Length: 329
Image 1 (tube, rainbow, N blue to C red):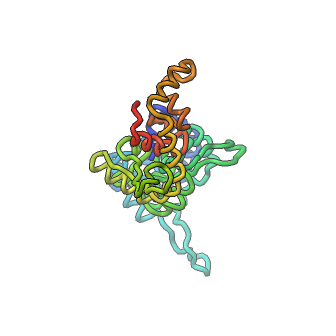
Image 2: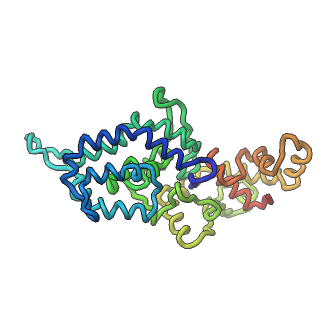
Image 3: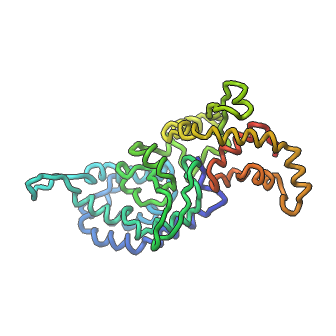
């Protein structure tokens, strides 16, 4: 789990750019649907919904998610949306098929997540700039191409499900850059929440939930077998609980179980690249290897700094195992 709220990016600036990009379209859609929406009233302050959205839309789009923030909008909108953001029977056809209510059509027009050419999904991926999945740090999600010349980019997961929180469907801080495996295969239609899961725009596993390995025999100790990859939990009870939920939901034990070869390489490299060897590299090549971080990068091919885990797959896994094997920084 990668913490996206790091010194590597200015999330406030990125979210502001995101809103500016869609502001004209979203306000136009609110105006277009305002007469319909003003027939509905918010639950807490009893304001016409169209007027409410017109005032609140900047916050809804670009403010960080927190329990207090989510509660504020749940109090105003949750029951209203539960009653009206749904399907109805189309009585104009013999098939009696179910179609979106006018309310749902209006909201989907205003919060046009599916219209990715408008909110520029490729540009958002580029602006966030993480190379690996925020949920697993196992898969590259590097963006190649742009919104005009599309080629490949990562998925965006709705941390708060669109079906439960339609009013957050286009919120910047609800869009988590991740891989297809985590988003579609592991998470699927399961729900995540600020209360029960690690939320990447606020925290990650950091140094509180770390990888370890459990050798069953001598070969697995010396890097020749397939030891079990597991986790150690060093955070407080709340962090442990949420970490365990993420590990279970995203099947991180199962995903990392295929990396026994990489684990053995780390164990063997650690045997070769001792503390004294890394220090000698620094002293022998002072103009090239200026710190233990540089020596570590040369030896293990990964960044040693926690905030740089997002640059390469398996970075946290590598650092945690190397740390367990006794590297002294």
